[in-house]
Length: 138
Image (tube, one colour):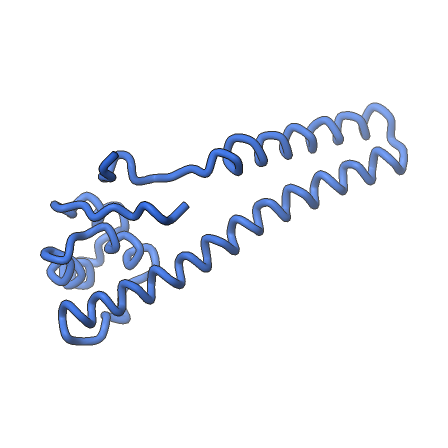
């Protein structure tokens, strides 16, 4: 299915619809058990589920940060190739990541407009006429 503004947000079902809900449910049940029967074992179970939740969220954040770095480098190289000059340092990460959806034909103009008008990432995405899908980012 071609990607566009309305459907570009992606979910990883195993993480978003399985891991996180089960971890939250387990943490909730562990807290309930600790309140009902406050023992060291139930306290350790609460701690374990809390740590599992933190690890799951941190693993996701670390993966996204690595993807952000790669996408930022790709967009800087793309701008250099298309415009023949260095990527503007004024753009924030969110703006840069939004620009990756723009086609080559409108990319340089949209980068310049984003700098001049300080467009938000959402405004940048909405300004794109020819959407270039990113099918690899999760």
